[in-house]
View 1: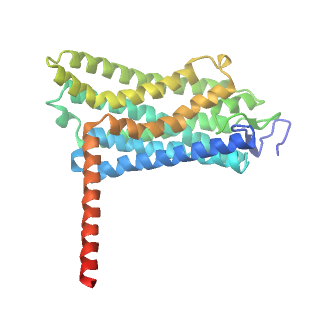
View 2: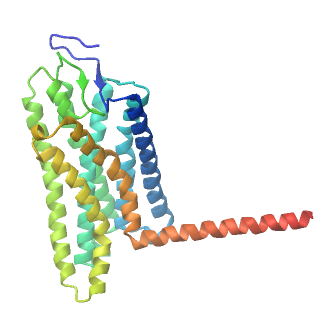
View 3: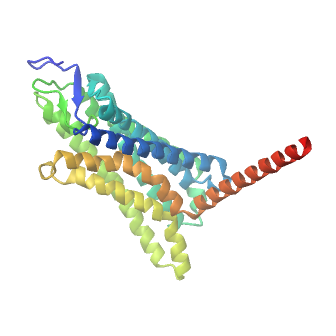
Length: 327
């Protein structure tokens, strides 16, 4: 299973959530349905935006990008976790583990960039409403989204390369449900100084940079909203960014726990639970947050339900006519 004396292991063992058979089955059922809801909800957002002209704006374009990202982000680690829970296939190849790590962290960095881009979009919409359509053109929104995806996947190449050069001698057991970076560093029997420095610099740049853009954008947004004279006007302005702000709070809340609070103060099991918040709970909640708190999406959903009701009624009437004709 592994080679000693500093050579590389051929595979790793993911512990996942060890426990009784009943516990594993219960977790499998819960995570499986959450995964299905996550994929269904985010696909629904993409379909709604694509089929309703009113939703074809930069804000919903970024939301589509976020929904598409969430589908792949949760798919990068949850199916493997489900197989660990039921099939007990805990092994994952060295290349497979490295690939999973690269995809998960690339998508995570892309999400930071997308949330910052969405905050900037809301800043322009609320602080410069008369010039918004000119500044935030279709070309600019596409360029920003492309930049988020490109930077997210390029920036993780550096730590992924250095991590791939590590050697493992004593253990290949990862106490997590996916191939996280920290367990790799802990398991390595060679110097990890370069890897740790590279990861620290890159992740600090991504997290703090996106956080500063988001924070500054919302400072200006709140200041602008407070200057609006009417209560109704303030409520309307705040409703356009409340969904995004809710997602930002949930996402950065988990980030602060995982990356800011010293790891010695956390148990590994608690770290797994908080990681689940980012990998499955947040992607699951995003579609509901944007539909429940967004009047335009609600109107689009109502239109879908009305159209479905009309189609069912028409089919029922046609069926009755056919029955009458046969009689």
